[in-house]
Length: 277
Image (cartoon, rainbow, N blue to C red):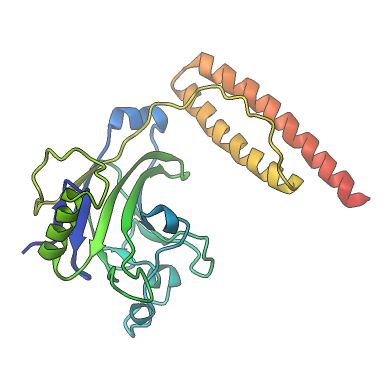
């Protein structure tokens, strides 16, 4: 039985609603160990609108499918158009996102200690008028450690439809006519009925020293929060440098952290003075 179709020319999968489709994840384990050794690994799958004009909007299920009687009680599951093929409640599978906040992305987080396949299924169609409403969508896969640090990222287009062959053929014909921009080399065959393989690109260690330009930011609390995020990320990277026994990088992180901590402390003191006046 065909679980779906994949167009290499379009980098897009075609699958019907409720049908499981496997995705085989691979990544460079050597780079991953250098970035985050001994960490538990997870793959997060987030469905997004792929057109720039729609990119800031959250993808969620249509009203009809979101109110089906057999839906689970958790809104983070109910509103997400994507699910793991594993049974709800399975250990190592988590549904993330604050469903009542429009700015909170909905995602499926799966524990994946090593490169392996995992199957998903869509629970809404691209044609659902009160949901995706025929807008182009993609699945963004991120490889993350147990602290949420992103180690790699890859994406693939997705269309949930009933007529897989027809829609795939039509989209590839439109591409050939120049209606859609070609984003990948056309060398592969037109389509394959195989498991989609996703190679999550793990970047090299990010240790370039950056001097921030002068920026105007409204609100001391906003600045403090942003700097504390940077502080936490650099603390994690400093720990990784120490585990790699990279003394040069560790010393650079220590200097940057000292400067950043001093700036945060001064801003907090300024904020405290303003609140007491």
